[in-house]
Amino acid sequence: MKYSLYQIQLTEDVIARIRTSVREKQPRDSVPEFEAKMQAMLGKPKLGLELNLYTKVAEIEAEDLDDVFDIGNIGPESNIIRLGPMHSISVGDIIENTKGERVVVSSFGFDPI
Image 1 (cartoon, rainbow, N blue to C red):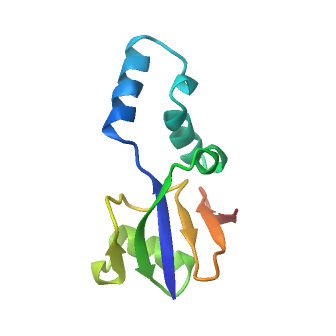
Image 2: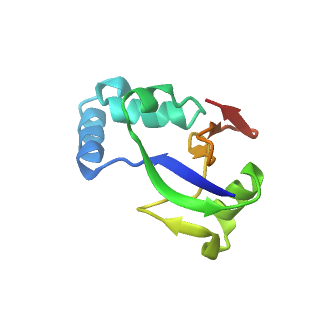
Image 3: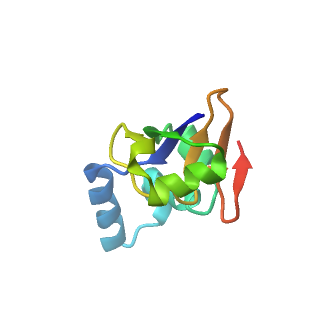
C-alpha cells in the first residue's frame, strides 16, 4: 500500500525569525511556525494543521504503519519517492493512507487525527 508522509519544514525565513526571537528573548509563540513545530514534536499536530504548515514530502510503499516508520528511518530507499526535503520519520509527522485516513506519529505508535 502507498502512504503519504507529511512533515513541517521550517523555511530559512522562519529560522531567521526564530533566531531573532531567541536573541531578543521573546516568547516562543512569537513565531507561530516554531510553536507549531515544538507542539508537533510532542505529538500534537493541531496548530501545524491549523496554520497549514504540513507539506507532503514523500510517498512510501509499505505494508502497514509500522513498516512506513521503519522504511522512513532505515529504508530501503527504493520504497520511498521523495517529493522534497525529508527528515527521518519522527514524533509529530503525519502519515496518510490511500483512503485519506491520517495518523500522527506519537511517542508510542500512532494516534488518529
